[in-house]
Structure formats: C-alpha cells, structure tokens
Image 1 (cartoon, rainbow over the protein chains, first blue to last red):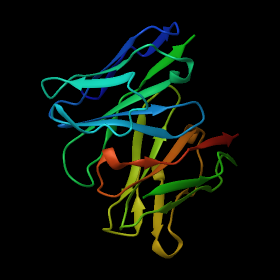
Image 2: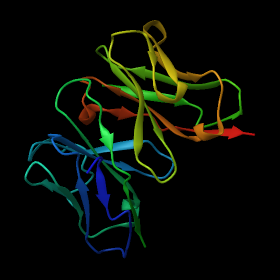
Image 3: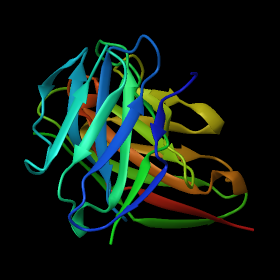
Image 4: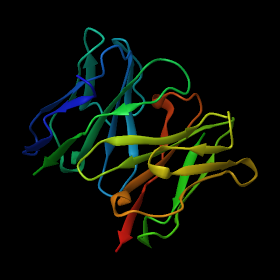
Amino acid sequence: GAGVSQSPSNKVTEKGKDVELRCDPISGHTALYWYRQRLGQGLEFLIYFQGNSAPDKSGLPSDRFSAERTGESVSTLTIQRTQQEDSAVYLCASSLAGAGTEAFFGQGTRLTVV
Amino acid sequence: AQSVTQLGSHVSVSEGALVLLRCNYSSSVPPYLFWYVQYPNQGLQLLLKYTSAATLVKGINGFEAEFKKSETSFHLTKPSAHMSDAAEYFCAVSKGGSARQLTFGSGTQLTVLP
C-alpha cells in the first residue's frame, strides 16, 4: 500500500487477555518502529527493527510485551495478560535506513483494556 | 541523553493570527529536530525537519521553524492560522536522525478560534 497500515484500528479487550497488533510498513522500508501514546502524553518508544532483527528493545515496558517481524515486512506487537495501564494508542512507523530519513507513521491502534 | 520540552500543552489562537508553538531541546550532540502534526484519529505526519543544512526550515502548510542553538530552541510558527490547522503538534529530537532515537515532547494541542 501507499502508507503504513495498522490493524485493528480499535481493540477493546478484557484485563488478562492477550492481544496482537499488526503493522504493515511501506514496501521497501527496512526500519520499523513501535511507539505507545498514552492519553495526553507524548510518544514512548517501544522497539525498533532493522530488517527482521530488533537491535533495540529498550523501550518494552515489561516482559508481557513482545514483537516480531517477518520477511522484512509485517510486524506484530503482542501484549500478554493485558492490564488497564496498557490502554493507549500504539503507533507503528517505518523508514528507509540512514540518518535524517523521515519516519512515516500509521494511524495507530487504540487499545482499551477493561 | 536528549529531551524535548514543549511549553504549553494547549494553545488557542484566532483565525488569521500568528501561530507560535514552543519547543526547547537538550542534546549532547548536534541534533536532528522534527515537528510532527497529528490530526484527530490519524497518525503523525511530518511537518518539517532540521538537519543542519539551514537554520530556518520551511515545511508543509505554511509552517516554518527556526533552529537557535544559543537558545536550544526550535519553535514552530505560521503567520496566519487557518481553521484546518487545529491539531496536536509534537516536537522531537534525534541524535542519529533515525526514528528509533526520536524523543518526543508531550505535545501541544492547537485550537483555532473563528
């Protein structure tokens, strides 16, 4: 597609359930990033992929969070045993490699844990 | 370490008035600086970026920002606000220019009054 696509756009889940969030980056973009945006706050870096490997997982808030990327394309962010504090908009971005390159963002997945 | 401070979580201006959104950064090395805009229910869109080529950077939709090293500032301006400018604006700083090292401010919600 023309842009970064995320699905679902909205997800309501019960506390304790697992959720999977999907990101389809722009074709040819080797770098892929996940951010979390809590209500009224800025973007919080979660994880970065270069190709299929994740050299920087420093932002993952706990071991309940994991992510993978296959075929240098689609990425899935998984949250296990969701908690209410996980409620946020999860944004995915992709870019070409190299300094100063623009990151293109998807529309995000709004996750609500009830 | 790098950080971004956006002064004013909410800014209101009248249609046709000057828009000024403030951003101050700290970085141990010369930074790359970005302004992103987020319209309701949409992902982030790059407005403009500073990569040391010129201190006055022009972006889309009539916005521009000036890099002032002495003041560690990168304020966003637009001479005449339009109703369609109502959105949330995020300033971000990057050491290496790649999104994985992007640190975002907490955002400024711009309201344009008729």
